[in-house]
Each structure stands twice: as structure tokens, then as C-alpha cells.
Length: 341
Ligand code: TXA
Ligand code: MG
Image (tube, rainbow, N blue to C red; front, side, top):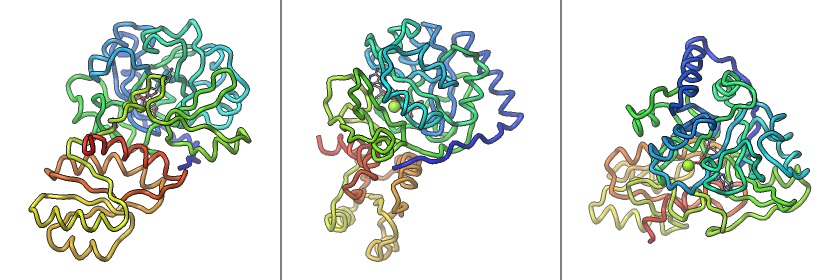
């Protein structure tokens, strides 16, 4: 998975007006939803403790799980973090604005309520023009704490409509910035004491991070000691049970489920003749792009759609076992957890 674009499209006038209203709402201590290039976020001004509390309440998120802090200007990194190693500076320079979150020792400007009591903080400068404009208008040395705008443990939203369906009347303002370009969450890289580790694969590939740092990077396995909801085994989950099938087992499993009369949706990469035939009968097939970036972009919207269509089971063709597909494989594994547990 890689992410190239740092485009700054102009923000339409209507959205500009809504951004001004959203900033006023943030200043009053309210929670708003806004687009980023990865997924939509549920945002609060970090200087309002009640607003931070509202995020945890609305999401149903345990209070000790840290939030990512978003700001507009990379140059403010030193205001929000301390003891910043060169590796972090190199990554910020190369990938910000963009889908990269750096975990660093926090400065005194970051409240503990945001970090779940930890002395480190996740920091990110997003590239979505609406997110950037929102942060700029909020002002210098101001920041927005924002988790993905979904109920804790469920699939992240990649459109304003997803957020509306999820929270509707609980949020004052939902800024609409269209469908998210990346579609999966940011890559989280921890840079503490010059030790670099990837805590969550995402919009920036492991390979491109290794290229910038000219070193091999450790990808932390599940069950690490740093609390990260994305690291809980079950996460990004559909309400419909989801099963990953390797090789021919995909065909076998779908045939069995079909015989049993279980309404099944099958997600495959590229068009497979054997499945097209079955699609003419009762099997519902979704053909996803055989490319990790485009697959990642469409994944959450597809899962949400299938979840709303009353299927009893979702089968997914296992992604290729390589670094490019790591972020997609990670999300699918966690989404499938409730099926295997
Ligand atoms: O793409 C994204 O990162 C989106 C958009 C809205 O920016 N945000 C997002 O936030 O995915 P959330 O809260 O759904 O996931 C944030 C992840 C969690 O796994 C959290 O534990 C981890 O970041 N995180 C935040 N601060 C951390 C810290 N100090 N140490 C370790 N992990 C941290
Ligand atoms: Mg999330």
C-alpha cells in the first residue's frame, strides 16, 4: 500500500461556510465530524476536556485508549512532542501532510485525557483540504483530537453518509468532503528513543517508510503492550460474520453455504469465471480491484453495504501474503475475528 497524492484541491464556498460553523462549534466544546484522506474523524478541540469526554461517550470507547491529535502545520511538531528523534523528523518531512501518525513523547501541551494517561502521543497532519482548512481556521497551536467516526470496534466511515447513519443526531455538524481517497486509517509509527516500529499498517506502506529511513522497520505483532484499539484482536468488525478463505476453500465454502440456504456475499479479487456462474444463481459476488491501494480504498464502503443487505455470512478471498497487502490483510483479519473466536 502506498499513498502518493498531496493535492490541495480548492474547498467549495458552501463547505467553507460549514467549516466556519464547525470551528465555532469546536470552540464551544462540541464534537463535529470531518473528512480526512484516510477515514472520517470525530473531532474535538483538545483544549476542551468536556469535548474530549464527549468523544469517548459518543464512540463508546474505553477511556484509556489514546486519541490521535491532528494539527495543520508540520512546523508545530516541536510544540506537541518532545525528544523528537531524527527518524521522526525525516518521516514528518516526507509524508506530512498525509496518512502517517507519529507516536512520540508528548509535550505538556497535550492533556493526559487525550493520550489515555500515557506519556506518548499520536500526532498527524492530514492532507484532506477540508481537514486542513478546518485546522487552519481553528488557529495556530490548536489541535483536534479525532478517532475514526464509528462506534468502537466497528467499521470506519469513508463518507459523510456513513457517519450520518452511524451517529446521526448525536453530532451537530458533519462536514462532507466526499469519499476518502485512501479509505484505510493512517499508518502508525512509533519513534521513541530512536527505536522505530510500525504499530498499525495503513495508508503509507512499510516499504516506503523503509525507503525514507534506509533501514528495515519492525512491524509490531498483535497483543503489544502499548494500548492501541486498532491492535485489539477484534476491530473494524462487520455485524455480519466475515470469514477469510484461502485458495480453493473459497469455492468450497460458498458452495456449502449456498446448499444450506445461507444468504452469502463473496468478496473476490478480479473477475473469476467460476464465481460469475454462481452469481447468476444465488451467490452474491463482489468483485474488488486486484490492487492493494484500490482494494483498501473500497473495502470499508463495501463491508458497510454488505452489512446493510441482510446477508448471513460474508466470505472474502484471502489477500496475497506480501507487504503491499499488509494493511488490507490486517483489517480483514480483525474484521473476521468474531467469526473465528
Ligand atoms: O487515519 C487515522 O488515523 C484516523 C483519522 C481520523 O485520522 N484516525 C484513527 O483514529 O484511526 P482511531 O482512534 O480510530 O485510531 C487511532 C489509533 C488507535 O489504535 C490508538 O490506540 C493509536 O492510534 N494511538 C493513539 N495514540 C497512541 C499512543 N500514544 N501510543 C500508541 N498508539 C496510539
Ligand atoms: Mg478507529
